[in-house]
Image (tube, rainbow, N blue to C red; front, top):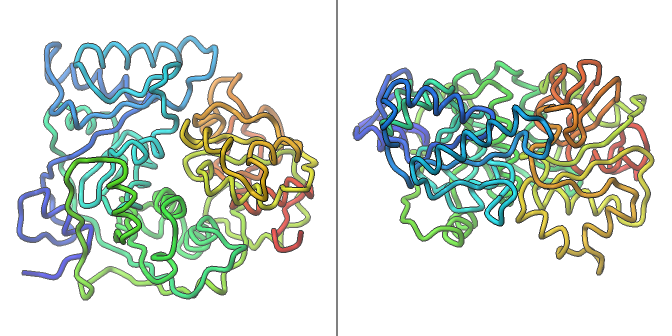
Length: 432
């Protein structure tokens, strides 16, 4: 039997095969299908078109629907999409619908899914969103798919997959306090380019990765797709297993690759040499150290999204903003309701994060959602409307990504975004 990487082993297991190799086309059994308000209606339409009006989903426990993109808006088309999801959930009697405006609402799907116990090591998770690769942070094979594939999965629970090559990223050394996972993944994407891992599994290992919290692991895997990857994945450690077991009673079996399994490439880094950085417009690979960009004056700082709206992201931002004042509009957008609640109870030196943000002059905390990360209707919180220069903890800085095609976006860590909000220009957090 050939030696296999972690991704290859998960896919082989879900295909009922003893082994697979890169390039093999195999049918795999899917554990979880995720969809939301942007792509859900299209997926549902394809499902009914192909399987019939009376068709049932492959497994009620395997379909999770989380509206999150365009929900806090007056836009009628956005509301219609959520209505379509609501009708489908009722039709199929689905148990996992996290509906806006109800106590069950959870927020952004990529954080809501693990927080509610739907992500388990060793499983196959697919979703109608490119950042579904986030869930590899917990040791799953997780990837984004289109509506057509999702409609087929919804009806059969199966998906045809070409086994990807694996590129291994070994991150050793001790991460400096002023460097975050966002700096780590931006450095990697800067090195290999936005096509440097096209249809590959990006596997992240090494002592620096093993020391990362769950929130920081999610940041790294979330942005694997920005290098063109099929999936990002991190071997689960005890912290991962404890996190998952605290959120689900369902059985799962972690999968680990063979240490000597062949890979397409291997990159080795010493993270102690990393520095705070940004990705300049209009592409995530446009890497630059933050200290090289102090000439960039800013109009707003945006701290939020599945990439940068986790609890640890806000703790980082608050550690910079405590006792200081922002001089530009600073948006605070928690990814989920769980995180929003913890902003009220998590303290630094006796002050809650919400209080720290308010005293620093940030805009009032927004309701949990994707908000301006994907632009959205004109009344979306934080959406750009003109030539605003933005520093953002989000994952993409394409032209028009946050609304206006004229707004240049600089991607950065919460530490750098907060420091820059204080200064009004791009600022390395070490310089405060």
